Length: 305
Image 1 (cartoon, rainbow, N blue to C red):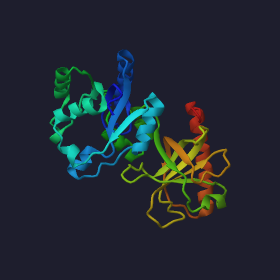
Image 2 (cartoon, rainbow, N blue to C red):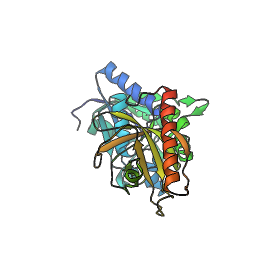
Image 3 (tube, one colour):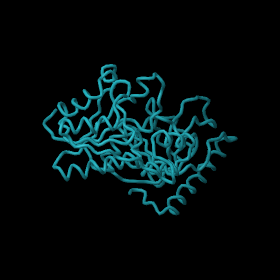
Image 4 (cartoon, rainbow, N blue to C red):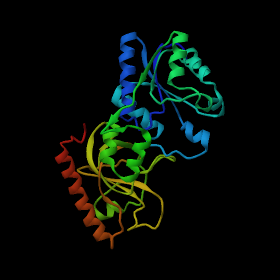
């Protein structure tokens, strides 16, 4: 794989928040400056979860992580390494050598708190020293703060779990996103006049606080629409505990079953609750649609942008 000479941004990039953005922008600038291919090396599963055995709920699926990096930064060379026991036991210096020998690394970009190698023995001081020894370039990106708070995937996860999507999006630098293919659901929406698309969260991906969100829906061809997305268990019409993301797309008619759709979350309109019946639910959905349309009008956000 060494055919390309790369500048490589290192990290897990969960959420691709504003701290990650600083790494990716530096990778692009360095690629242009030194004539290298801008690249990202990340992992398919979270190293902390693998090493500790504790579940780490992720902001995005690997596919959404890659999609954000490609769409927002134009970096197509994204390499997912499988994190397993062999990776966990690799010495920190061997990891740097591996990047140069196997992936053609000529310059490495890492965040201020980057840890790597067996037992997390590698840090940015060792990375910088090893790069100097090997004749590689190295850039360490300082922490990025917003309102006095350091941007981190951990903090963004907390905000999303609380349903504070507005603040989460400020730290992400873009709307929180869920991409999935449209699945067959209960089809109640068609009966009550508000058809919805049914999507699921990949196992291990954080589910936002249950409730109704103003969303933007982007279809395969790139067309964008205002949406109202309900995340939860649909207590009015179901006694199942299965969580889904059901989105009613305003001003759209068509069959999207089996199609890939991207839903971006902008604001939580209300919490999920159980209604007295289908008619009450239908009336509330109509109000939610008005609220979503007003939100985008007030925020001056173009649905397809």
